[in-house]
Length: 271
Ligand code: AMP
Image (cartoon, rainbow, N blue to C red; front, side, top):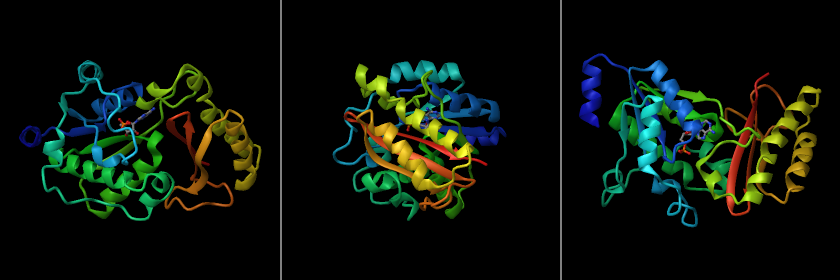
């Protein structure tokens, strides 16, 4: 992978990287297509990174289908699939981790305390191996995107991090590899997370700025469907601190258990 990248650079070609855990869906495809528009050579990495899963989480049963991914990635414009093994990424005695403090402890970091350390470590390694000019991430994982931007800034990494909008199913459910876990009944109620965020948008555009009032309404909508909320918060995008009033760059973020499946979604108040 390193020598391929070096060769591309010698030829004067720009490299775009789309890091994924595979089981590709149209959310991933939108990132690959955008990378292809922006860059000469597109690398898609597929690696189910064990260090970003907690001990009780779904590392083992995370969906995998490399043959299908190969076809989808190629059709979307990927030039190279990088699919390292665990041994290559974390050889025996591996002991170096990248941790973005503070930001990694908020929101998903509360119930997943080692998650972002795993993400930033593997993404830093991918950046070092592949040396992309640009790398593409989805706003669906807003906290991840902001943390990676912070890592790049703090460590002076020479890569531009591009965030792209969340792709959704027709009924609004944010597309995710984990949606595969949902039973038919769970799949039917899951779009309520999106509907609640849409309701928040409506309430905010009608002039309401009080976070407590807005979140109370959202909580009611979600819990009516027997979904267990992990967190539902309105935070400042720059430091994920709770806000009292909804303003420009307030992120309304939710994580919730639909049965045994933890789903996340969010909405950024831009104006
Ligand atoms: P994952 O394979 O889940 O680690 O996701 C790989 C990349 O795809 C991350 O940058 C995600 O934020 C992004 N992604 C996942 N789902 C979506 C979606 N529905 N829309 C846009 N991007 C997504």
